[in-house]
Amino acid sequence: MGELGIGEVVRRSGVPASTLRYYEERGLIGSVGRRGLTRVFDQGVFQRLALISVGRAAGFTLDEIARMFAPDGRPQLDRALLTSKTDELDATIRRLTVMRDGLRHAAACPAPTHLECPKFRRLLERLTS
Amino acid sequence: MGELGIGEVVRRSGVPASTLRYYEERGLIGSVGRRGLTRVFDQGVFQRLALISVGRAAGFTLDEIARMFAPDGRPQLDRALLTSKTDELDATIRRLTVMRDGLRHAAACPAPTHLECPKFRRLLERLTS
DNA sequence: ACTTGACCTCAAGCCGACTTGAAGTAGGAC
DNA sequence: GTCCTACTTCAAGTCGGCTTGAGGTCAAGT
Image 1 (spheres, rainbow over the protein chains, first blue to last red):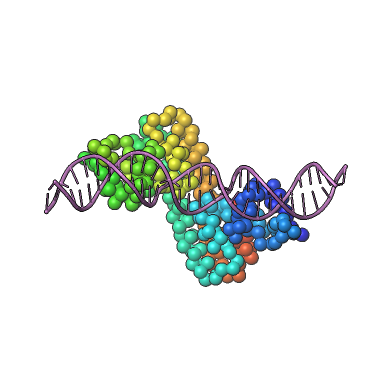
Image 2 (tube, helix red, strand yellow):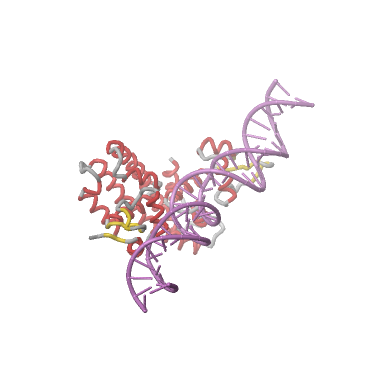
């Protein structure tokens, strides 16, 4: 069925083999096993890689991601961790949104330097507070 | 007026002195000058630090942040950079939002493991695509 | 005069996340 | 049987972003 060599995973995901090996070593992917020496992945690896990539973009460490999605964990603890991570993420999103608006404005604003623009300064204040 | 020693900046911002010195070395803060040996900052440093912190959370490198807010640059180029950064940021926000919703759902979902939950899988597909 | 405390410099170290390189193996094509 | 290609391991290197430590300066307090 959907069994894949590492090369195929590289081609389809764009993730380098060295990174895949590294992720396996860290316990993030690659549960299927070996055919002789060589690793065998299943289709699920692409989901996992997507999760990892987004998780990284969200500022989570590999350890945190591993803990979040490990199938071995105590689910109770996972849920709590998940909730707190969700809240963190929510805060991050809000701050990024403010930042994006600030940048968007700065790109269009006629003021000589951004720090002189009152609108920009107000956005900054929202960030500092 | 609002002149501050490094200790005061540390106390008010929570940013360690070593980091402040490092940021200065990298050209991100600290334009006011020295009183003898010791650095003198003005109130604006807090805005800058807020910008840096949010920028970092948005995944920008210190170099990129320095380039974005350097007062010395060609404004033309700055604006272009700003616009492209804004777009990047926008994409990041969208992905993080999907991720947040995924996590939120996962935290509440009764499915034994998250990957078995159809809702969660659909979110993942939105990420992979 | 001397200690204390806050500041300084500069070089080296550390952590996370990978990448690179050297050296080996396994299977198929010719 | 030997060459190619795709894989393997393991140790070391890299890069960004700081932190740590040793050793020095300077102003104020006692």
